[in-house]
Image (cartoon, rainbow, N blue to C red):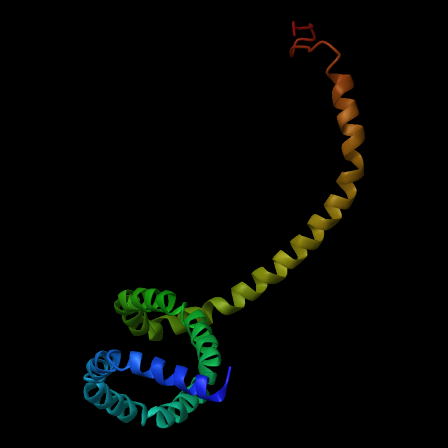
Length: 174
């Protein structure tokens, strides 16, 4: 194909396309009618995203500040564990509070009890000495009686095989 023919073919194709150009231009114009609104919305989006670098910086600070939260949680759990006894302490305190009148009365009688306690000190000390001696005697008794337990049991079984006698020397049934 010659250059002239190619040029002529292009001119014919262009001329044939000319009637559709107004239609295509109308479509483009319709499509661009929304561009001013789109431009305003894009400006609003740009304005809203201007704060993102500051938010990113603030989020980094928040992340840094919240790094201690696991340690705080562990400390709070420890405090909760250690304060669990407070209810018991409160209960005991209430009990002591109810006993306070009796304790005050006891405190009033203490001056009267002091001489009685002083008088009882010497007899109690003697009693402690006697109890200590009694403890030693009991230990000796245990050492003496313990070896006799087996023979006494055997003797008891043997004696149980004989008929019982009444006070007059006659055997009784049994």
